[in-house]
Amino acid sequence: MVKFLFSNIIGSFVFNENYKLVDGLLFKGIEQYRNKKEYWEKLRQKHPDVAVPKEGDLYNILLFFKDKKYYSQFYNKNIKITKNSIKESVNNDALIIQTSDNIEEIDKTINLLTKRLREWYSLYNPEISNGIESNEKFILTIIKRSKSQLLKELNIDENGSMGANLKEKDVSVILLLATQINNFYKLKKYYEDYLKELEKETCPNFATVAGVTIAAKLISHAGSLKRLVEMPASTIQILGAEKALFRHMRNKRRNLPPKYGMIHEHQLIQKSKSGVHGKIARALADKLSIAVKIDYFKGKFIGDKLKKGLVDKFKVQY
Image 1 (tube, helix red, strand yellow):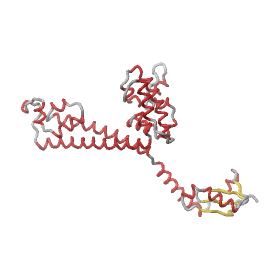
Image 2 (cartoon, rainbow, N blue to C red):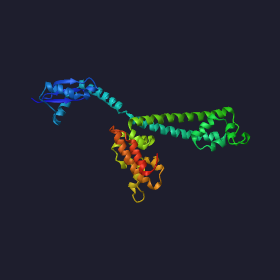
Image 3 (cartoon, helix red, strand yellow):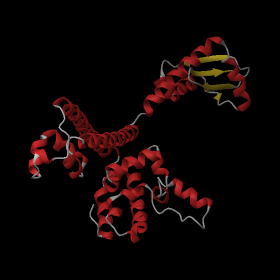
Image 4 (tube, rainbow, N blue to C red):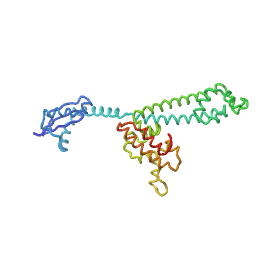
């Protein structure tokens, strides 16, 4: 007599040739479902003549589980498995992507608010507002020193300044914005340090060759470290330049193919002459492709050797 062994998220079951339930072991949780082979072996010992059902038999066996008694179990256990899968899908890749995107958004916020601050503060002290190029230095300067101190350093008499004589309350409102922007800088630094730790743990080779910021951007653009591993070096090279690539594909005569994407921001390229940017981008993409595969498959740390190879080849420190 033929018997069929069948498993689903509810348990492992044995059916006879008429598709009637003969025996079964129910799973108590997700772990039991994952280790269903153990349950198979227990049932095989009791029923040594069992076989795996073919497609036609499978259809008839599945009809058995249309009963309301099993339907609710199917529903509840599927929900549990789905929730557990979502929970397990959150890994360091996701944290790197979120942290990188967060840093980028903080940076945009800083630039936007600093532009407003410079315009606002220039009503009060235009000589300083226009005289300090670095935004971070400008903010720290106006927080720590008064208008009279700053003008004295520039050998400008306070009465000779073009700035308005604002009330103390008005000045404090402007400086409050400067303080908040300074807090954003501190927050950005905190997340940058956190990102560095994440990458050191997740992709040390890749981060060493690419740099912390570019490594995070490439992972974010690809969607995950796994997707980046599956890409050839030529794709990593132009990652982020998809629009330029599509323009080239639409009109190859008018538009040249892109030589690089996000990796153009890499110090190795930025510090080199424009004529060799394409050559460096290819070599860099090759090293990045090697580094990300080593990291994904938990290989040894050779990031410093890969980086040294690029530095020695192109005579550029980064």
